[in-house]
Image (cartoon, rainbow, N blue to C red):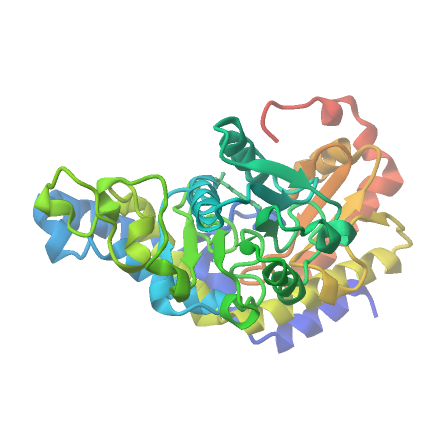
Length: 407
Ligand SMILES: *Cc1c(COP(=O)(O)O)cnc(C)c1O
């Protein structure tokens, strides 16, 4: 049986097959980069048009109340909450992931007086490491990096916060959230999980593992659109004492009392800073609703099946590539990364054929398997393109090695 025939059988039996129709995907494109920018839900343009034309155009300033703009950050946060195992009042959609990291790292440091170390791992997503560096330059933090197998022993009594990304952006390798959270707590440290590559793709249980804080991205698997607001989770037990440093008026207990003095809002609302991006939240809400409707459990199951099938297709065509991701699907997120000396050119050659993945320096070709809108037929076709590009040597064409500024 050819990979294509097997794919057709899998598609026929796929309970999520119908959801592809709910996304806009260009003709001739196999989109394996939904882990970087999620595809556009078909309902988004109309939802945005309604917010722009009716709520903004007609309602004007009244829409802060009449259209529920004030409550939007909390409302969208509450919809994200069940996707990560949080209670609705523990999550808010606001700012970027980077800014949310800053707020929560600073808040954690303040909760552990006498400790300054923020522990993470080398090779974590750059912005996560840079946000610690900024606080270090202010004299507030001390950055410590330890390889993943050395993290438990690096948890000494100077560590205020353990901050890690659950699914590694480059390899998809997963951390054991429960074990590491337990180890950090045993050492008296708090834990902040970056769920950017997990939310909407695999089940996460922040309260089940006892996490203190989490952040995540709105434009990847949640399909909120470019630059979508991110989210922040603060466990209920920390909310009353939490002091975050970006004390803007939207995090005030009574923003419209126009008092001279800051008083943080009770609960998760104090994570807000300035006026929320209503258009961005409106687009994010459509993506979150759709992902929640499909269900993270089903999405995870399908993403594992897609990545396993991709490997099977490569093997059927005699292609052996070095896998940078864990070989066991249970140990990785919704992606497969391959190491290749010419990963950049390989990626460009695939893009020229309409197979969009991405390159991560220095040598990784990264393919994301966003399960909401990919079919097994897509996967079989992508694997065939990959085999052809490799065996024909097509990737060696000079135009494929010229680097663009943004890849
Ligand atoms: C995508 C991603 C981010 C993005 O941060 P922004 O502030 O939205 O640019 C942060 N952390 C991780 C782990 C990511 O994968």
